[in-house]
Image: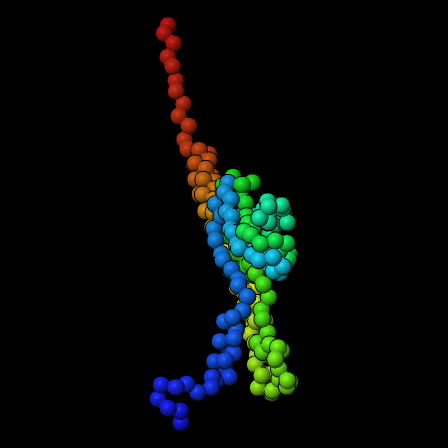
Length: 216
């Protein structure tokens, strides 16, 4: 038993979590973009770093948005108009602040909900090969496999959460339209019914005849 106050070797799962915490930087945000609005984000990136920008419109209008990515010199690296979703990978050509913006300026009354995931750099290996003279042990290989499987699970969960949110938004919008249509039909039926009642009543009502006397 190790002395009190000292620490023994890390358990395998704790070691896996500790190494995974050193992964590449990633910004994953969901935000609302009002109509006639533009939202920009900034990220400091070192030269030679591989980055990936992925976005998707979850709710609003035709589920489209404008996206633009610029380097520190203002050179446009990526520009798309009215895209529902897309992914773009690039390698930073120089050090500095990179800017990417989402625009809903073409919409006059519909606001959007936008999700984006901006990854800077690549995940470092769990067990670096530097200064290693032996191959990975069975436990280390299992940790690597679990780590890769967990990353795949996270990607699938994010994908299905976005699809679920988009489907729920479509269903709520359709439900609202059906409710309005039902209310309109009820009002039309009520008006037609009242009109028919008055029309039938006019058929069976007694017509009064008036006589006039002509003086002799």
